Length: 356
Image (cartoon, one colour):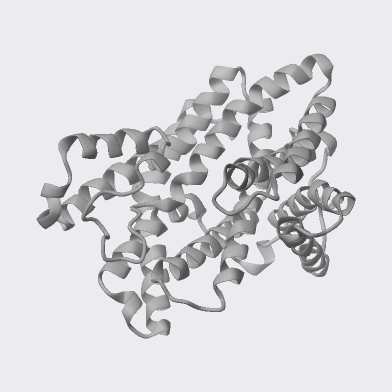
């Protein structure tokens, strides 16, 4: 099933960091409160970067499942990969921001504080994304609005073993392909929902990520070798993949058959582009980038909010970008060295020859 294929660490890490930077830059623009013509472009780039993350995750997590000794082993690996850094981020910024906004502590009851911590630690941050008095003068008051995708990722982690378990009886390719086509059909059916409606949230926050995650799983199931291509081919592949992905998410007036073909094809093409890029040979370039993507993704939002609270968004735009992106990268590097890397080393010590 292609479970022996593996991605090169250097190219995979570099590509993940680039995707995380796209998301962090998009949030930096949105949280600044600026009314700019670049907002749609930044927002669409971040959306596609998140979908690329889900595509890559589908491939790697399915690979991890096949390499696991049992479901328990699989879930333990996933938990140790995701949760330690996530929990530290929630608790760290909760403490720091309460201390920084101590003058408004009376606005936050003990129950409200506890409810925030519990819901966020349980990946239910949408139930309590903010606290009274904290970031109240920022354009948006959310403490860490980027965490919403983590609960979706965890849900997919839990969904994959039953699907592949059913696949052992009926054929994993057949089962996953049927679920993928069903997700695409539902995605097309609900995509006409107005902004803010239940259909809109179901499409953007569940069905769309699911289609891309399943596309990554399907790639592992159908191919024994990872894609190889020249840099020029990768550029062309991305141009087509991005155009199709934008068409899929923005083509409300297109013919239904054309929209379904685009809906079914776009995740598969973006997955191919993502995995091809992650397989590029960077050895001759000398590039060695630690995989800061998860640390950057977890921490960039509150760091940006802190910069805005200190007035960085009220200065010159160039200075704002230097301050915010610099602060994001510096803090993510510190967080990776002090929190995420030790957690990964602990995970790898459990079964160094089995964990992925």
